[in-house]
Amino acid sequence: MKAVTVPRFGGPEVLRVTEVPDPEPGPGEVRVRVFAAAVQPADLAIRDGWSPPGVTVEPPVVLGNEFAGVVDRLGPGTEGRRVGDEVLGFRLLNCQAELVTVDAAQLVAKPAGMPWEQAGSLSASGQTAHVALTLLGVGPGDTVLVHGASGGVGTVAVQLARAWGATVIGTASERNHDYLRELGAIPVAYGEGLVERVRAVAPQGVDAAFDAAGRGALEASVELVADRDRIGTVVDYPAAERLGVRGLRAPRTAERLAELVRLWEAGGLRLEVAEALPLEKAAEAHRLVGTGHVRGKVVLTA
Ligand SMILES: NC(=O)c1ccc[n+]([C@@H]2O[C@H](COP(=O)([O-])OP(=O)(O)OC[C@H]3O[C@@H](n4cnc5c(N)ncnc54)[C@H](OP(=O)(O)O)[C@@H]3O)[C@@H](O)[C@H]2O)c1
Image (tube, rainbow, N blue to C red; front, side):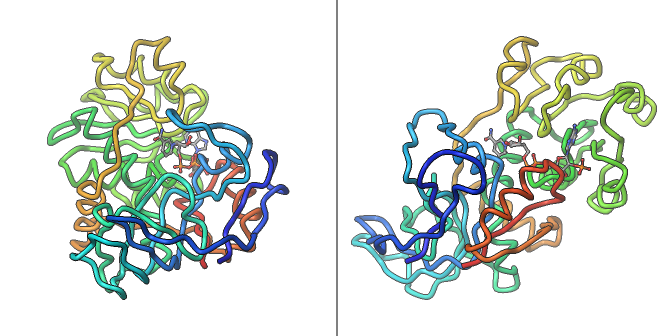
C-alpha cells in the first residue's frame, strides 16, 4: 500500500509517499481502507522530530492520527463488525495510508450523508475540543472564550460550547469573523488590546477560557477569568504550569467521537475542510497547516 512516510526528520520536503507492506489486523482489530485522513499540527511536529508524551518516534514513521474509510478485513474477535462498514476513527500514527489497522472497539459508524473529507477530519481536533470543554466544566450559563476559534480545534469547540448552553467569544483574524458568527460565536480579533476587546463584548464577565492558539492567549485569559481552574490549554503546557492554569489532556474514546457524530447528525456541527489533497501532496498539506492560518482542516485523500 501507499503511505505518507517520514524517512528522516526535517521540513515538509522530507515527506515521501512510499510503498509499505499491507498491515494485517490482529485479534480485536479490523483493517480499514482509508478514504480521508486529516493533517494536524502534531503531524508537522512529529515530522520535525517531536514525540508525543509516552512514546518515542523514530523514522521511518507513517503519519496521521485520524481517518475515515471502509472496513476491508476482520481480525479474530471482531464479530460486531462487517466488511463494508463505513467508519471513522483514530489511532496514534499510521492513518495517512491506503490501509490502517485499528482496535475495532474504537470505530464509530459514519453517517451515510457525512462527506468522507469531513469524516476523516473530525476525530483528533473534535476530541481535543471535547476533552477541553469537559475538563473546564463548560455548561449552561457560562461565557467561554475560545482562542484560535477558526482552526480545526476551535471550530468544534465553539459549536460544542454552544450546544452545551454557553455563550462563546472566539478569537480569529478579521477575515474569519463572519465564519465565527456563522458557528455561533461573538468574534474578537487577537493581538494587542485583546483583553479590552473581550471585556467590551462580555460585560457580564468571562467564566472560562480555552486556549487552542498559544501565542499569549493564556496571559490574556488570566486577566479575564477569575478561576484559574477554568482556564486551560492544549498548546502551551509550559505557560500553563507557569501561570497555574490547566494543561488539558485526556484519552480519546469512541464515546466522545460518537457524541460528536450525533451532534453532526442533528445539524449542530459544521465541519470545515479548507483543502482536500491526494496523499502525494502531503508536503503541500504540511506547508498549508504550517502557516497557522487554516480555517478548519486540511485533509489527505487516498
Ligand atoms: N494537546 C492536544 O491534544 C492537541 C490536539 C490537537 C491540537 N492541538 C493543538 O491545538 C492548536 C490548534 O490546532 P488546530 O488544528 O486548530 O490548527 P491551527 O493550525 O493551530 O489553527 C489555525 C487557526 O488559528 C488561528 N490563529 C492563528 N494565530 C492566532 C492567534 N494568535 N490567536 C488566535 N487564533 C490564531 C487562525 O486564524 P486566522 O487565520 O484568522 O489567524 C487559524 O484559523 C495547535 O497548536 C495544535 O498543536 C493540541
